[in-house]
Length: 236
Image (tube, rainbow, N blue to C red; front, top):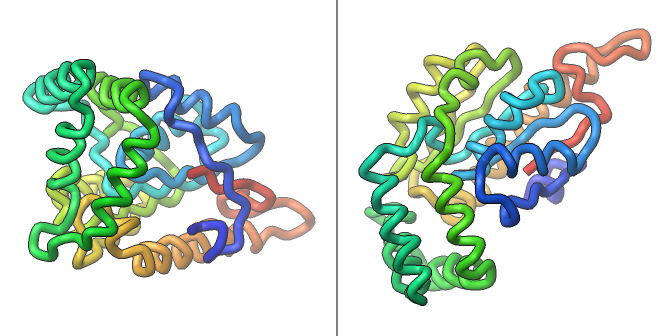
């Protein structure tokens, strides 16, 4: 969506091969050279923050979509262990049905094709990827300090009805961050990219133009100004 709508160079990170967030971030950083603007949805947002922790000199701006930067709560971590046990027993479909049910706006039942799409994506990745990603989320580090210390521009976007990574969490990040823009989009839960793709795309592209591309284009004498992103890449 970013490449098509915003016309910028995009590198898609592979988050399927590692069982820890730090490993995912290191793989994403090695997939491209130079300056980066990570854009992360859900777990991808945790990876984006870890990228900023590992290589702050390369991250000029960051966008977080439906993200919880804190470590997993003990109760949620226990649920993940139960889910993993069920998946190992061949019950991936049952676990997915329960997880998907809580991902959409509660006051606007998701269209059947959206539920099917999420199921197809998860089924296509298979149980091994589910287990790796579930464990990575269970063991993830608390990145709230990264949010507070990041010097670049930060975009925070969430669905107004997100029950997993609520607007309250995003408002707290906006208060802690140094240069944050917050957008709460109505008619969406946690699956904002599927529920309101046009509104999300508009918010992302406006921010990329204003906070990323335009400052870089103000350079003089052949040197990039602002965040220095000119010639860089968007990492999703």
